[in-house]
Image: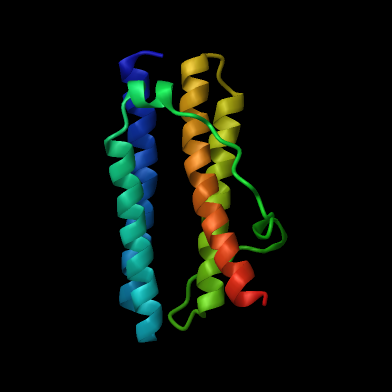
Amino acid sequence: MNENKFEEVIQFAIKKEIGSVNFYSRASEMAKYPGTKDLFLELAEEERGHRKLLEDLTMGKVAEARIESIPDLKISDYMVDVEFRPDISYADIIRMSMKSEEASLKMYNDLKKGVRDEQLKKLFSFLAQEEAKHKLKFEKIYDDEILR
């Protein structure tokens, strides 16, 4: 994989993170309840952290990265998408975030399947792994705080 292709993929991933930051920031402004506003601001900050991780990523770091198998609780597999509304509940915010991470994970896994270049496959695997970590975080929150 050449440096230009690497940068193209990273810029694509960064744009996705920026979109998430913008969504959560707007949602915090529109949310009806103070706790919900705070949660959306926290999620926006988390997405800023993801963006920073991508901005600091190099081809060398990806080459050295160990791709781990991230557990999948599969909770989001049985949920429908949740639409934002100003009076959205905490449970629905977690569901919405979980489904968003699930979609990103699927996208990177699908992109990985469509390429032959091993370095590019590893980059998509790395990006999928990061999304899988985020999805697992929300699934654990949902399991620990909502399902119990």
